[in-house]
Image (cartoon, rainbow, N blue to C red; front, side, top):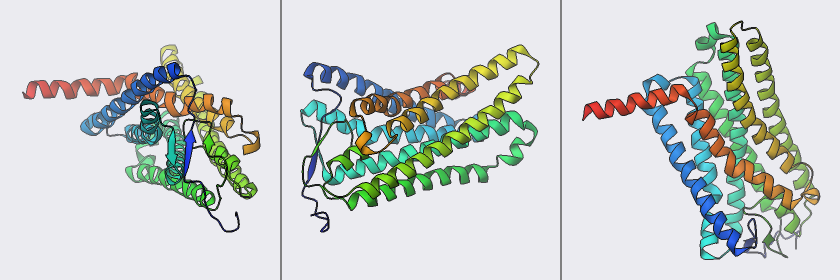
Amino acid sequence: MADRNVSVVTEFVLLGLTDSPVLNAVLSLLFLSLYLITVVGNVWAVTKILASAQLRSPKYFFLCQLAFLDFCYSSVFIPKMLVNYIAGQKVISYHGCLLQYSFVSMFLTTESFLLAAMACDRYVAICHPLHYKGLMTPTLCIYLVTTSYLLGCANSLIHLSGLLRLSFCGPNVINHYFCDIPLLFQLSCSDTRYSEVLFTVLSGTTSVTAFLIVVSSYLGILLAVLKIHSTRSRYKAFSTCASHLTVVTLFYGTVIFTYLGTSSGYRQDRAKILSVFYTLLLPILNLLIYNVKNTEAKEAMKRIVMRKIFAQ
């Protein structure tokens, strides 16, 4: 069967987070609220950055891309999950399942490298402020963002090509709320050893590389901050770096620990809990830390609102 590459399974069943109807109803409302906050908040963030002349800097160019990624990333699986909860159906087609994972993989990888680019931007801004405009040119920023997207697409296409070679001819129940590749390996009736090794190497390399770039950048920032004589300025810099480091540590940490090892060691209950952090909560945290708590962005939004009021 595996040699002929025939896919007998035409659909998969997503069990979700729980089997309890009451909890499913509560989670539906919770996820709907989180999704609406994510969509409205990120659309507001993108609109605010594009509409304000004061926010035309590399920092806000990257934040605009981050908001767009969080919007797209959340839209890959949350609407489908809500439809399944409301309709009482937990089915996703074979091709829909593979496409869902492909988009999740693409946006995850892209965001990993985008966060690394943002960390480098902050390092240059804090440690080399006099050379910041000369180094972080619009061309370089576009290059960094484009590279992040290309790496995300390449990683996703490699995994998708590996999944398309597998045959699914047995159980079709996925104990998760979205199609995750280790679970698809477990359901396949093909030899998945090559695909598993490829997945582990690619995922580990991208996650660890991006995380090391972030950590090294913030270590450089930390050393620069320690040289600041003003206690108030040092505290402000530390608080900003701490909030940013919290986000990136949760993102990289949960992704790395979720996919640590092969599919045979993939603990489904742990994976579902960890997945909640990087799929549902981190887009909200990104919105809060990078936009809501951002004083400069709030002041720019106030100026936009005031101009609209006085223009009328």
